[in-house]
Structure formats: C-alpha cells, structure tokens
Length: 350
Ligand code: NAP
Ligand code: ZN
Image 1 (tube, helix red, strand yellow):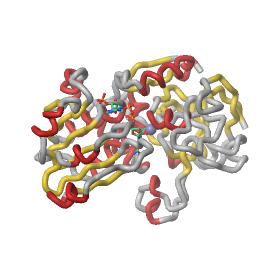
Image 2 (cartoon, helix red, strand yellow):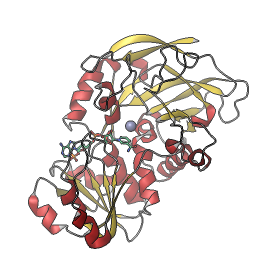
Image 3 (cartoon, helix red, strand yellow):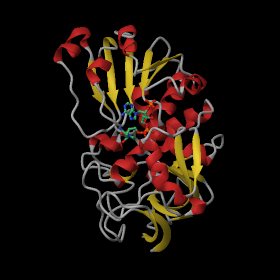
C-alpha cells in the first residue's frame, strides 16, 4: 500500500476536504500514475451530491485523469516509467464477456469497475470502493491506461478521457461526417468537445444552447449554426432538420420538442443523465421513423482512437485550471452553467 493525498466529500451536502487515502500495492499488471490533472465532469457532481442514489462515502470523484507513469508492475508491457498517460471512467472489467471481447468494456455484462464509487474488495481499495482522480496518485491495471499523444497538453487532454470519448463514440457509431446534419444540445463540458469533434469529422454542426451568449465560442469551435432554445421560433424553424442530435444536457428538457427537429430516420442520442424519465409522444417517433437512443462513455480502444484523432486535428478541451481548494465553488458554477468549458484541477495543489 502507498499513501496518496486526495480531496473527498463525506455527505451529499458536504464540502470537499483534504484526506489521505491508500492505494493498493502494485500487482504484476498495475501501473502507478502520478496524477497531474483531473477534470471535473458533471457526473462527479451528480455522484458527490448523491443525485443518482448509491453514493459511497467518503467519495473521491475524478475520472478525467492525466499524468505520468511513476512505477510499473513486473509484467507491464504497455507503459513505461515517465510515459504520458490517461485514465477515464473505468479501471477494470471482466475481460471475457461479449462486450469486453468486442472492446466495449463500458457495457461489461458483470459491470465494469468504475474509477470511483464501485464496490471492490479491501485488497484493491482499503475503503471498500474505488477512489478517483482528485488525488495525487492512482493505481490502475495497464489495459485501462491509455497513452496521451505528444501533441496534446496533459491539462487540455484530461477532459477528453470522459467528455471526449463520450461524444466521440456516438458520433462514430451514427456516422457523423460529410453530408450529415448534426445538432449538439448544450454547450458545456461534453457539448463543446462534441462541436469540435463533429466539425473535424466533417459534419454540418448546429449548437442548440439556452441562449446565444456562447455563440462566438461555438463558431470558433467549428459550429456552422447556433440557435437559442429559449426562443420558441427555433423549434419552428428547425423542424425536421437533423440526422443526428447529441443531447448533452444534465437537466430535464421537453424532449418531444427536440425530437421533432429530427429528419426521416434521424436519431437522438441521450448522453445527459438527469433523474426523471423522458416524455415522448409515440406519434413523434412514428412520423419520420425517428429513434431515441443513448450511449455510455466508450471502450478503451476507442478512447485511444479518440485521443489520436484529437491529436491529429489539434483538439483539446477549453479549460479553466483551478486549485483543489476551489472544487466546491467550481461545482456550483458548473450547475449554474457558468463554466468555460471544463474545470480542471491542478493535482500539484492537492
Ligand atoms: P455541463 O458542463 O454542466 O454541461 C451541460 C450543459 O447543459 C450546460 O452547459 C448547458 O448548456 C446545458 N444545461 C444545463 N442546465 C440546463 C437546463 N436547465 N436547461 C437547458 N440546458 C441546460 O455538464 P457535462 O459535464 O457536459 O455533462 C452533461 C451530462 O452528461 C451530465 O448529466 C453528465 O452526468 C452526463 N454524462 C454522461 C456520460 C455518458 O456516458 N452518457 C458521460 C459523461 C457525462 P447551454 O448553456 O449551452 O444551454
Ligand atoms: Zn464524466
């Protein structure tokens, strides 16, 4: 075991506090990572505040992790000491079920081991559940550690480990590219990276945001069009327009209104995870043969593919670097949609 400093929250309405946690002894396939940066994902907030239920305390969130390899187990072959590496939302999976064998570990039949808040035995984590990246160190099995290409700074790469792959995966799955009209709802952490990636893939990209306040940024990220959803006329003007809608909004939306913006055979992919069920009229689906789907992060191989794609197109997240004692305030600002566009914790301040 080794000690690491971390920031943890102990109750749904608690504040973050500095704590010491233990990381497991390196097994033959384990990599010890000295964390450099950890992004703040809205899922961290849903979990820390127990908005989905089932949060295990003390909770150390963080699944957008970059850093350097500090030590490796005896049998590690994929990474060497000093390598620039990243860890996303998962740290292990069964490895033998059909989704795992198809490089879709996020759909592991037994349930992937998530980077934080998954129950594990106390030989893996003394507290009995995984602890994430708001920490100086983390130990992860080598197959769940990806390489950060040289072209991307570790700070702007961190958010790609969750936000990046979560949007890349459905954009690839539903063939975003030339000739496709793609809308992104919500231009926050996931949404702004979605705009950059969809645009680099060659799709015609439209942002659907609360207001026009971030329009200039949206166009700088590659959006061809930008509309305010606060304006009812938007829904009349854009009816039947899109082949693919990526919904990144963390709050409840009148989804039926958005579904009607899809063209024949169009699909809306839900990425945002508010608690309430979605209301849709069957007629909205049947007319124009529309589909509603969802997507969960992306597999490890696809995470590496996304990082290589981002390096090729010089895509990184737009970040605001904060020190660890600013996490509570950053959470409030994310919830208020006051983030441009991802907070990233400088692990040197932990
Ligand atoms: P975020 O940075 O807070 O962005 C969410 C965006 O949604 C905001 O910037 C805002 O965009 C819009 N929004 C927020 N509240 C709204 C409201 N009341 N009405 C309309 N629009 C609103 O969050 P994020 O980190 O990108 O995460 C977004 C969601 O995805 C969260 O629910 C998170 O848990 C989920 N998530 C899912 C996966 C997955 O695997 N499926 C992975 C990661 C995260 P505008 O200001 O442009 O309107
Ligand atoms: Zn996330």
